[in-house]
Image (cartoon, rainbow, N blue to C red; front, side, top):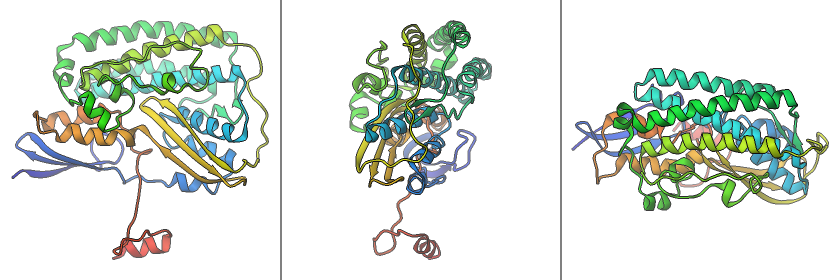
Length: 388
């Protein structure tokens, strides 16, 4: 028969509110579902009541770790609608900050993976090294996490030779540390026992479920927005799209570690080739965007991030929508948990769940229907529906 057990919505395996509904027979998971609707904040709707400039600071708060990806996507979208292009130097600086954010995101994930499997010394070592990246981020942008670096028309701050030297020396030191972590993940029996052949997602399954980011690339899908649809100056900065065909949690860890090394190389190349010139085109604080629709997508640390904007010619967006990578990967997560061709054990659930690098605050979506099936569109009707 099996027994249903809830994991969440508040649970030590993840700091955000999410409910995993697991059907188990003994120690084996035979069915699963997920509910990620606990922290819906209505940011898309709130954007309709903010000016285009105010919306930038709201979009940055969709996700703390991915704030650079969101602000990059938003500014590219607005700039395309305005017909404005940021100066080349600003685009290089955006790329540098984007890759620094990718490094600290992947290292955060690696530390949390170590925590999930009980490898506390690795957790502390990785977080110690991640602090150095955050120090660089603070020196360059003025903030550790929510950077507020990208603005419509360019970036807020330039980089001077002294800071450039510190970035180079810190990343060279970090490169050696990350190579040690790569060797550890490759060889350590404890890590391999908890990740190899855990959370299997074959290539055909990843394609069918439209997985993105490291989840897809660890299943052999060579897809990265930076390479397939270049933005900023990604067509000028060489890098390798890291893929593996292990199709498991171990492969997702290895892909992220290799991507950290690629990001370090990209930053070094960018600093070698960054041109001189302005870092920003002046845009008035309140402006109107011509009527039309725009889309932008970037490769966030977790995968493809997609923004859609519709303008009616006013000072505010008529509509703004975002498709985040975690939302795209939830279908793959549920499939990995409920697959019937191989055993999935309760003890492996935290590692499988963590292997998609979930971010729930940017994922929650709410769609409300009343008993007759028509949409509830205002707060008064929504309140009545909750009281039934």
